[in-house]
Length: 403
Image (cartoon, rainbow, N blue to C red; front, side):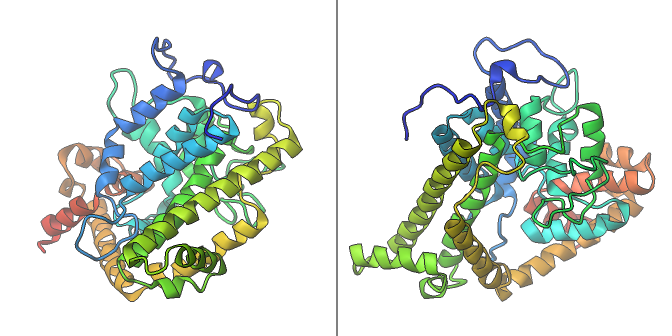
């Protein structure tokens, strides 16, 4: 499985990329997808992930995940899936490394607060914000705003979870009608629609196998590390999580093979085995789907009408059970909720303050926002807040409100 052969016919081909919004000569030393990955790693938004919460654990210590460590783990798993499926590892990694660039400070709490603030102005969506970061907000290059990533990487960032509009009714304001669709019941984010008009991303089709691998890697990574962080933070116990049948089976095997093993090593064994089991199942199930549909090109993957990278039904059910456990016992834990409430309060106070008085923001942001009105000003304020790290946001609260 680890041996790398030629890419499959359905893989994305860096030499035949659909190109960049701003055409550039090819690199003599790197493929187009390698260049994308490198641009993402060197971006300011990527560095800021080091100081953004993954799950807001109110404990001292530096061993819990941040958005950056989560992103690195997702990139590693995405490469493993891509390698086994014989598709482009660099594209899979690029999508994985960019997938959380649009997240706010304070994790889910910060995003919920910013969504509420932006509700009268078209809403806030972290996937759309990630696209906004890599196409507009990163200002590094002389000729253009953004990172000028390839079409394939931008496609993966926008729709790694599936199509964003219905093929039967591809009006960009029309959400997908299926309950399992990522945009079900929600309008297409305005920025995705605007960018698609300038550089069409095929929003009514599925993304590449590489992007689908990144999406699956995200789910696998966060289940594994949330189990790890939750246990080490003592938000729940090994006996608690053993109420999920899949985890119970893994723990039973560890205790049978290693009786008397200390708790810290049991946790590590549990997490590594859970991740391995999901990765191996995703490889096997995805290979089965690919063999059944026999796509002969990357465009065949986009038009397949279903996701090609996924879990078998038993493992998908195990994943749902673990997610339900984590929601009830970690994300809804009173220690987490108390901190999240304070985080929501910080964002909820900063947004109206900056909206009403743009001069409270740094000069560059203040000048931009002051020249705008209504929804346009709100978007500028949201861009500023979404880009903050946790500690910078807390510093802004102290600076603006004095405590």
